[in-house]
Length: 126
Image (cartoon, helix red, strand yellow):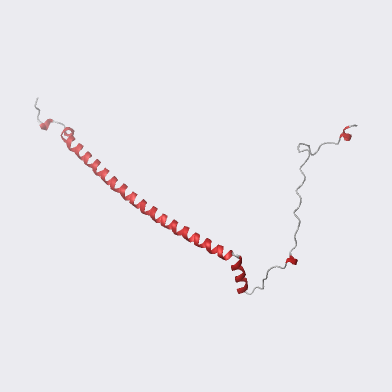
């Protein structure tokens, strides 16, 4: 039965066009998503590179400052700096040093399980 095209429903006539439009939107959306994702990956890669460069610079500066601190703390540098500032510092005279003996370690407790508030055996009898 060959029917008249005018008698077909509007949805049936536009179904292929609607399918094509949805398919085109799906492909276009996927393409836009792909480009956006690649752009994000590129930007994140650049951020990582900048952060790694900054980390390298900070580590280098940290090492340089650590070396400078070690030099400034050295006895030779401290002595030289004391002389430059005319602080009147001199090495200590051995007669000025007082050596104290190391305190002896306390004797280990003979009965570590003993109660501290135990009664004397004589006090128990009435």
